[in-house]
Length: 114
Length: 114
Image 1 (spheres, rainbow over the protein chains, first blue to last red):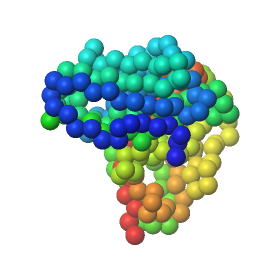
Image 2 (spheres, rainbow over the protein chains, first blue to last red; image 1 turned 120 degrees about the vertical axis):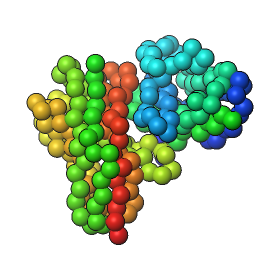
Image 3 (cartoon, rainbow over the protein chains, first blue to last red; image 1 turned 30 degrees about the vertical axis):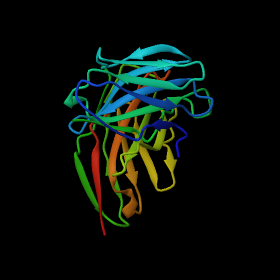
């Protein structure tokens, strides 16, 4: 158990809809990352938040947005969903600890768009 | 741009034998971290081993060890006494100090033959 919690584990929704994925980082971790893993692509970095502020942005579509709340949990909002958005979405966290730069992943949220 | 290359899409090994997975990376940074993550069929991303670039000693974790060649920008993973539970996709990943994001290789699918 990495200590990173993601909900929901599975989600099926229709094209055009909007969903929210939730992530609770490991206790004490200030950084939260979101990654997307499609079947035919590797792990793509979407976005990072550090203590509530956006720190780095990757290949995140304009239809997607994220935020990190004061209690450090994060949400990834996906809107106007398309079939191609079907993927496994990972949340990960890291923090100031002996583990240094180590990033720990949650179990992922499976999104299927039909 | 920082890139990570895993040149072996698939590898197989007999149970109890040793296998080495290759990884090369490209960066202009001098201080960074390298990781191997394991992704079993459950799709969870599990940290296997971590190497800090400024440390010359190769990291080891039980049956897992790395051969880190900084000048050659090579970071291979050796699995000794392979077990059926080692069957998974293995990803090599790079992160500059500061952990703004992980850059992943394409992955190597490891099969363990009983």
